[in-house]
Image (cartoon, rainbow, N blue to C red; front, side, top):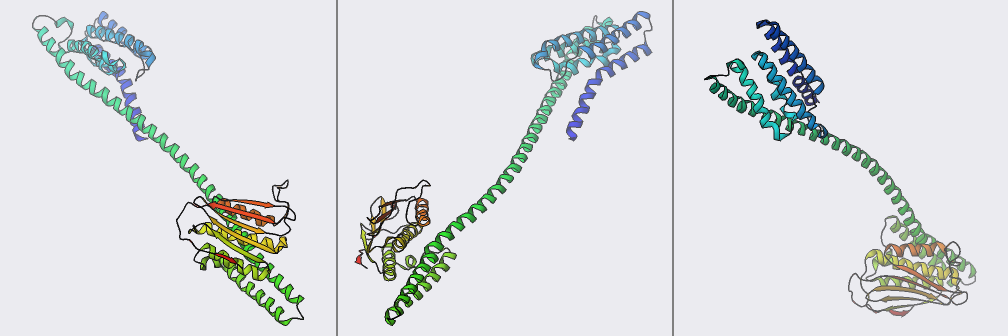
Length: 425
């Protein structure tokens, strides 16, 4: 801001210097003479003409592109007025310096001849006027012209170049200030967007956690409670058989303990207990099938084909939960006498098939996109989990023909060691 004020003051000073030099010259002529009517009249008339020419014919600096011709005309007229006033009196040399000040309005190629012409006029004042240009004075005059050209030329060139650099710095500073202003606006906008993204991320995280907890509750608490209720109802049916009643109650207690442990693991976002304790996914699924068979009373055949490979934990959890959900649906809806779990490993995919010979259902999508039968939430949760790991779910079923659920995930991670599992549970 201070530099802008200083620049404005310099520009006003340079604008007023020609008038000040003209006024000083006129005052000296009037005060020192010669006091002839012709000299005084010419001095006053030429001074008025010079002031009017400066005021109305002048061009701004830096010269606009469309006013360069006008600038040449203006400077030519100024040189004529300088020569005329110096002819009247060498005391107008104070006004003659105006020529050096106005050289900058010309195209760069005209600076040297313009300075030379003005130097010639100024040298005339230094030898006492045109009347003294004769004899040996001409040599002195030529030397003074040369000195004026060199000294005034160097000073003029340096002044113009410094002014150009100063204006360029001012433009650069102005551009930098504008860039900083835009940067601040962008930063403020980005800060607002960042806050919005943080809020959205927090809300998305809350929603994801709710969905995770809903799925875990469905897979652990809901299924465990269903099994407990089933075992307690079975115990009531065998009041006359204390041994069988005790066995169903013991199974209910076991399911309650396992469900509690799984609930705690879900809160801590850990892998399912059987999967965490097993060495391989096939073993975890075999253990799952064994426990389910004992509580449901349905025979389950577990089969593994191909060479089992260790999969990323997230993928193993998805396949385990799919098997768990598939068996839970069989117990609740299928009324099956047999079930089967097949885990197939290939170079491209790992496929988990859950089969039963139960009542089946109409697997064609309804108008809302859901299956017409079965546990809609469970099937939806299966699909969502599989999509998160790049997998897919297929369901084949029809009333009276049983159900086949097939979950497949990419298998291109690691090469493992075969694990032989082929049991009737």
